[in-house]
Length: 609
Ligand code: COA
Image (cartoon, rainbow, N blue to C red; front, top):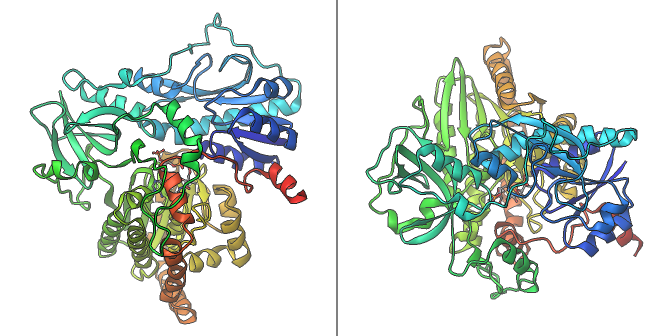
């Protein structure tokens, strides 16, 4: 079938559905929800058999839903209606939640139901639930709904609140007043759940050191305690720890609320206006620009909490953890090592998979320390939600010179990559529990073997970030795995690749496990099997010999120098595309049109013209 995705953005859910539907032989084209006319035009151009809206913030125009079957993917159980579905489910401690595929109609979220799936809730960030449980349930529900539509004899169920199994209800949009933390009354569980329910967007508005900030990225702290609920009692690698009534919580990231900040709706309107989209440079020199006309900075940038609070934390003690000591309980850790039998597991759980210069440096140090352990195999674990998304674009944006910080970050990333690629003392495995993008994909290829959870989506390309050339030794690592032709198409086409396809083309060595527990158990089996294998010495010798052969053919330094030559132009050259694209990405400037590599229906007409 020809399926048109109508979506606010090509987010993780839309990407995963794209991968699954294309794999099943459907042709999928994508249109961003810009405005009603543009939507109608896309439908006219593509003439789809079916329209699917994986992630929409506005109603589908009547002229479209009246004449075409449109599936809306709603992240709520049957009967749930309104925005903030997942936010309310977390706030209300729902034990079970779900995803419903319903047909667009005149009333928001009230159309006939084509399929619905449920999942067990856990106390976790909204963004984490969305990227795992919601995505998995949505894939199941959309595939069922598409199959039912294709067979033609299925009659979707009208929404009927008199049926006992319809447990959802219409709810009002959640407001900051609903999310507000009362530090003198809310216990740790309540504080956590409020911040979790707002994670990703919009955060919980709170006051710290006399200023307003949105809070994100919370986790519980088991041992630290303070005297006054809300006070900052410790800091650790960019996160701050605040006392609660009955314990403490860590807050990893925050966003400053500037004076006179717009509401979200105002902001959306503003961002679509010419001032924000038509960015011009104030310093078109050989140095990279740091500010743009029509600056969006009043909307704030999500950054490590301690970076935002700066000198306010002078007297707040930095907690030191030894990443290599066994730890039981909960606290804020982004890098830690575990050892079991002859296998070492190095975790790096970076928020959003973004890796700043210091995080790359710390991870390299930890990796090198891991190679000194008595282990035969090192498993690089990434984080639970993301493996890696490459260099940290927000920290780069916040730096005094984004160009210099980009340079520092990519070099720190390259140093880490080099340490992994040149390891001669162990075999290494990349175990991808979550998605990987840009340089993060190539980080996984630095290991001798790469395995991914079945639902993982790869974006092995940089081009979408303002024609960024990329480094991370990708010119060595990617063709070595998939060949030159495939490497070129992956990097130029800029499309997501599912784990199954990644395995088929040789990007990774295997994919398995529908959920994380399953995946981790299998990855552990493989690592232990390798460490205990009688072939281990021969495999290690072969690895070292291959690296020596490759080095003779073309030294790693040469790959790095060539890549960095291009990156220098990206960062410091006259073409500001990377800086503009990064700015748009970190400030979430809405697209004014759908890029042609996604909108195949527009590709056809533009080729004709
Ligand atoms: N630096 C900083 N933040 C990053 C990031 C990066 N490299 N990559 C992703 N993020 C953040 C996003 O801003 C978003 O933040 P928020 O939702 O907390 O506000 C969050 O991570 C999730 O990203 P999102 O784009 O919503 O995820 P997705 O699954 O829909 O898309 C990617 C995945 C990889 C396609 C997309 O995140 C991307 O293009 N990232 C940039 C990759 C890149 O160019 N890296 C630099 C070169 S190595």
